[in-house]
Image (tube, rainbow, N blue to C red; front, side):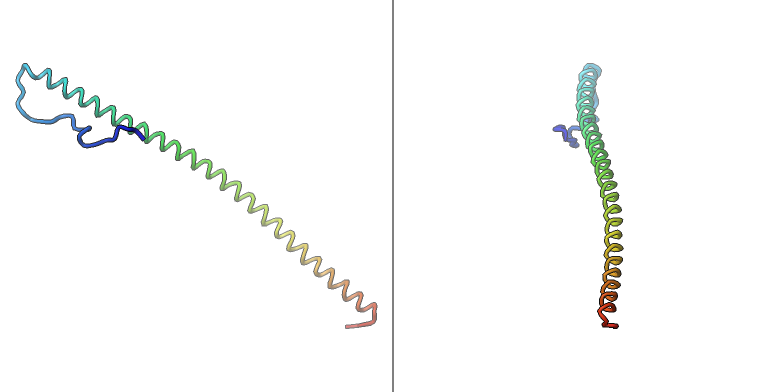
Length: 111
C-alpha cells in the first residue's frame, strides 16, 4: 500500500473564502495549484495501489479456479476408481460364494 495515505487534510486544496487582493491572487493561485497537485499525487498513488491489489486478487482467483478444476477432476477419477473397486469386490464376493457352494456340494454337504 502506498505511504501516501489519503486524509482530509491532504485532499483539502482550498482553505478559505477570505477576500484576496489582486496582488495576492497569483500567490494564492500558486498555493492552491501546489495543494491540488499534492492531492492528485496522493490520490493517483492510492488508485495505483488499488489497481495492483485488484490484479493480484484476480491472479489469485485464477489460480484458485485452476486448483479447484484439478481437484474436481481428481475427485471424479477417484469416484470412478472407487466404483470399480466396489464392483470388483462385489463380483469377487459373488464368485467366492459360488465356489464355496460348489465345494460344499462336491463334498456332499448339500446345503
